[in-house]
Image 1 (cartoon, rainbow, N blue to C red):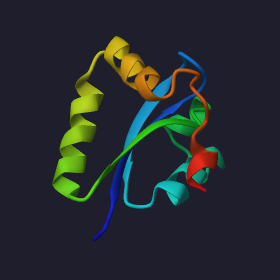
Image 2: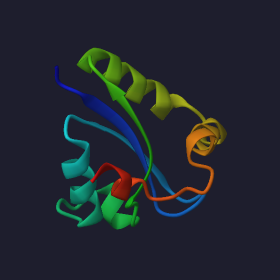
Image 3: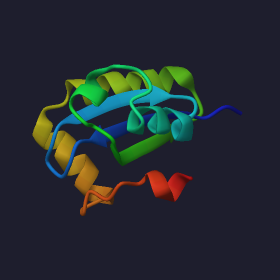
Image 4: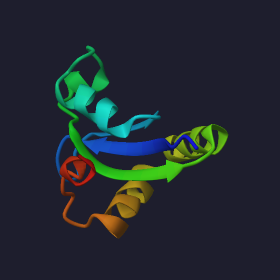
Length: 95
């Protein structure tokens, strides 16, 4: 079964946030960290993986990504801090 990931990147604690979806979390975060594609994350140095969720169904993952993107900033910050209160870069935990 394929896994799909919804993730949040941050520029720093309480900094700029980016929400994305991917089927290969390690590869996608690596691309963000190394500015492989000129994008929002490269422009604003949004490179720290601070939150992620796994889904077995692409439709559920897309639905969750859209839901999180509609949330206000305070809700997103609370979500991050529930599992990652120090805003550590979680990339090392998945590689």
